[in-house]
Length: 605
Image (tube, rainbow, N blue to C red):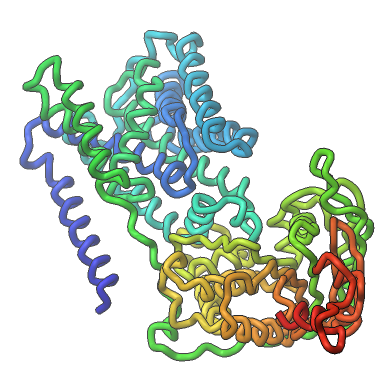
């Protein structure tokens, strides 16, 4: 057994023992301890919900108590006004809390960082103020007379009985949160947390994925609210203040963002430690605050930081067996894949790209070269939807392409790498490749969470395919390693494998040889040829002229945002405009015997 597997088994064993001890608490503890334990369970549920938003997806939410309130008021109102049972109100609590997640999430999740935090804070306060001012919610006095849950004639009214119900709820939420974290949705959230722009550029629909984080977190918040209403039989707006949201956030941060065990530990400390400090009387909150500060200084990543999630590669990888090479795609050689017409991009008064036009034919390797600042990467960014054209038109197989979101362009068959490596460093090489094929998964997320056979079969097929692409670039043996720990050259190849995993028709490589040594560059040339032979057309930006001349079928030369030459490598080598753009002069090197030394040094570099 590997050390990772042994460590994982050990953590699970500890978790099972602790959960069993918590379940047995009512049999051995006083009513006071049970009541404190029930508070811990409630905060555990809320912490697990917020952990999806803050820990998994990396979104700052300061108004999470709003979902808590919506769940509680839904149960209270439906029991007191419509005489529903507690169990009948639960689906409505989940639906209304989830719907509120959509209402707040869809218009605001385009915001980031502090702006998103301010908006969510406002949402939480709006919900509390509405509850305070509406007659139907009882105004500031709240709602009384909420009936206790009844389970087949057994009334769940005593603290011990409600505690047992809380244990069941926590168990359900734990399973749900763990399954989410292990799903492709969990990988997508992690990629967004690591680098949102890169996640969008490799095919993850970031807005929809972030919205799902809000909805999933809201569902759990609504469930916690229903339990809260059932526990006390009465609710009022003072239980759902901004302070409540901050307390839940402290639980997540203190325990370790993204860490499920950490959330549970955080809930125990936040809900239990103040009770243990009651002997300090009025000083207990001060002592608690000092303790929190010390803990965060000593453990800035949390008391139980999230461990690196290692998605196990298919069994072949574990056995060291080679995977079958990807089947080449049949292509219609000479078909026009990409038609760029008069592409123009201005940044304020700066003309970055000025009226560029070219075509990319199926089955070719087309290189774009030029001095720094020539506009090459801007062209790539316009093609992939990262930035919008100022004017011009881009056609993909005859249909307009420009203006689409980056993830939609990936879905249409165009993938890219970046000038500066943008891997998801805290994910394994294997997980990076799986994120690259995110849009190829067709099974609904519910089917994956429920582990239905067809969803498991699809996941297994894609896992095998991911290993194939790692094999293709020579990284199969490093599938389980953290991407940030790979050598530079391997990181470059992993980025290519991630792009190829989307099964593109056109691959855009932005300076893939940057930082590589001569041996790695030679291997890269061979890899680019194999990519083309596999049926993927390649559009390449590169400064290394030896590589460009060695792999290109055609070359486009840019300077100051315009195309100054295009043609086959031999034609480009002899073009005086190209030599002038690179060397600053078209004059011959007078010190060379044959007058060609200056040109030779350019193309052989």
